[in-house]
Image 1 (cartoon, rainbow, N blue to C red):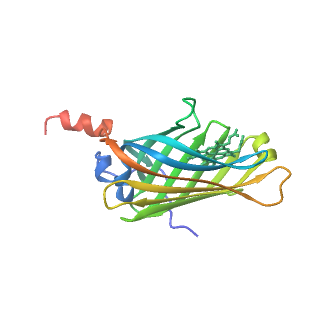
Image 2 (cartoon, helix red, strand yellow; image 1 turned 135 degrees about the horizontal axis):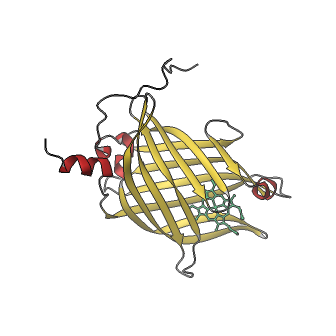
Length: 214
Ligand code: HEM
């Protein structure tokens, strides 16, 4: 059951161009962030490997996005991770955090260069966010290459974000993998705390409207 309207084409009138003012529970994520104490548990041939990592995340507001009557505000993000020992990329991820004010729906899209994408959904409030995607779901699902399906089947992804009183935020990323030849599911866990190193740049439509005479 859903409560979608019959008219799927008409867009809302008077859309507020100020994305930063309409991000709801995503607002604390806007900006540029760094964290030096990330911990990753990843699958290797001779068992789980635990690595510490350094992370930089940029999350910038995008212009409001109407899907017909559905209005979405969001942030475009890029996560880049390396380690103290190596300058090469340890993990790279791009996507959007999205928020629909009318329903409270929170979504995260993610793409990682292993040939994997996901659309995770959930809710958020002033304390934090939780989103989840499941392999096989037609709405909030996970799509992987044939090789990953065979060797590292990704059954679920769940991200929990906690907003800390000092303005930093922490996450736990819990990805369940079925590794080829192993019976037990593998929990690929990542966690870190991010501290702000730069403010967000307001979205393009907002900046254009600010320059126009009233
Ligand atoms: C902070 C976030 C993450 C870090 C630092 C990280 C890091 C890693 C590392 C180091 C490996 C082992 C790579 C190798 O041996 O080739 C790995 C494997 C993997 N990761 Fe992540 N990962 C992160 C998040 C994710 C997420 C969110 C997903 C999917 C939703 C994911 C899916 C996978 C898969 C499917 C593999 C196995 C593929 C392979 O080893 O070739 N990872 N990850």
